[in-house]
Amino acid sequence: MRSLRGSIRALSKAAMNKSAVARTLGVHCHTVRRYLALESTPKRKPRVRKASAIAPYEDYILKRCADGCHNATEILEQG
Image (cartoon, rainbow, N blue to C red; front, side, top):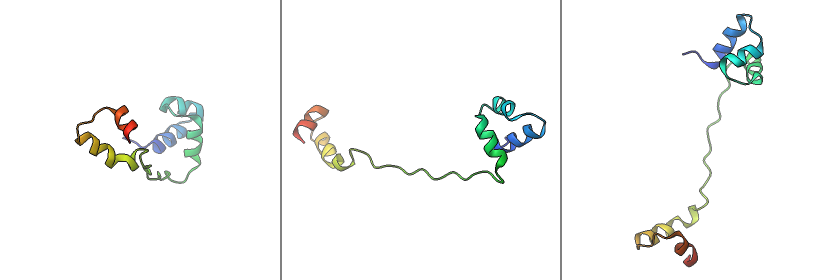
């Protein structure tokens, strides 16, 4: 399977305008313009995972669950 950049370049060389290329590939016309302007395919940044909102309370919640309390409202009120 061809890369998106390769597909964009091939269709562009086949005398299709940017809007037609975008419609054919199902991408935005700005994406077509950007990829045609680039020398190489852009590198994706690695995804940075954010800490969970409940991470500071995880030990307490797990302890309460192990003790048999499975009601979130009770855990919240007593925490």
